[in-house]
Image (cartoon, rainbow, N blue to C red; front, side):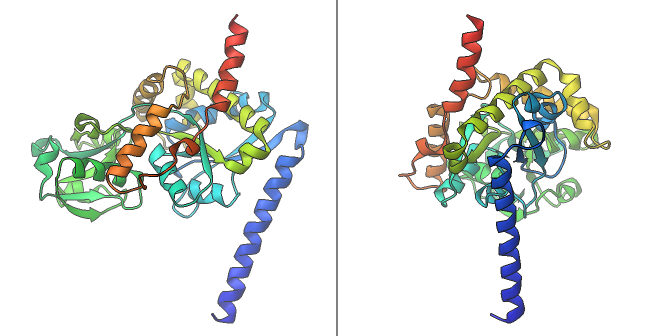
Length: 339
């Protein structure tokens, strides 16, 4: 290792250590007005109405009500939620689904889910051109299909293909839908709430091939934190979840405000797209008997599906990957108030 490389490694290590130390100091001491200073890492760098409850938690004062001041940070491949939480840079994060959480824990990341936002979401699908006639997964056999390697969608769609014993020609295209539109690909991964909406608005109509139609049950966003945060600052975790769930209730009942709060963060974000997104998001949020509820059945099903395709070991301890303690704390307060 040469001297320049060694110096670079030392500098990066010191920067991370400084950030972590700064974060720990902020959590352990009051900020302005007695507020605890926290950060929430989102999974992507772009505005989306799935994040409207967090935007509203800031805009409508739900965080402040719970004595916390939360900075909402965008996620990127380099600044992804799992990495930033594990390194102690952030305090909370939104993951695209419990699959990411279980995969991370299987690799040693000490992360714990505290709430499930979207139940039975079926967000991840294959899309095909409307006029292609490709509407069933068996019709993709031998076809050229676009994936996003390293993305949660790939694991989910691999589950589907393995279950149905279908082999395709895979191409790693990331978020680029140009090859699908130009006819270079026969099908491509997508979220129903993003490309599933935006492609038709650009005049490219699509079919959906959904894992749910073949018995693959998937969930949406999960809120996670670290084992250390839960152990050392349970009151902060409770206050954070209280604020998010209050904002989630508010968002469901105030759709236009949820859209406006999203547009306020990116003037190029189309309100019409936001409303279509929320129609899908809010339905999956409402699938839960209680907002945010995370259950043994949900996590157990996720584990089983992942074990079947070799994503995690059969002896994986799924119970350690989530807690309902803070949900119980939130709802016990509501139930007591209602008496």
